[in-house]
Image (cartoon, rainbow, N blue to C red; front, side, top):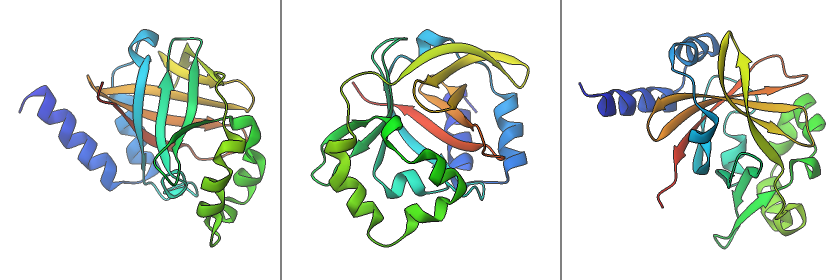
Length: 184
């Protein structure tokens, strides 16, 4: 097997999901990411582990993340009803409510209402920065949100794919996601 096919097999396995412990073991085995490697546009997908947030971002139209530079991060990019991409300001989202009651976002019509509110939640200004952090004993790239207590920590699956773990204060279990570099 080549490194590329190994990476694709791992991505497929992660998309299929697993336990938190299994995905943490995979995360721990992956190499770190340099901050500069994370600059660019990324397509996002959740990694199912039984976490209350599993499938939530996708249901709301999550597209991914965008880093114009190390100081210019857009942590939540969503696709609107007509296909328009919106960079959402995480400070305008009820993060504390979603942490305590994630099922609220799964109520009927919430996804449609969220997409209708995207223009009001959107921002052109960056809302995160890339930094090197030590996480689980490894120094690696992470996205530090400006307005909410979230750090997304990255490890490299292959040259075009990162495995991320969301560290959100008050959330006892990590939430995992994949980022695939968007085509230019």
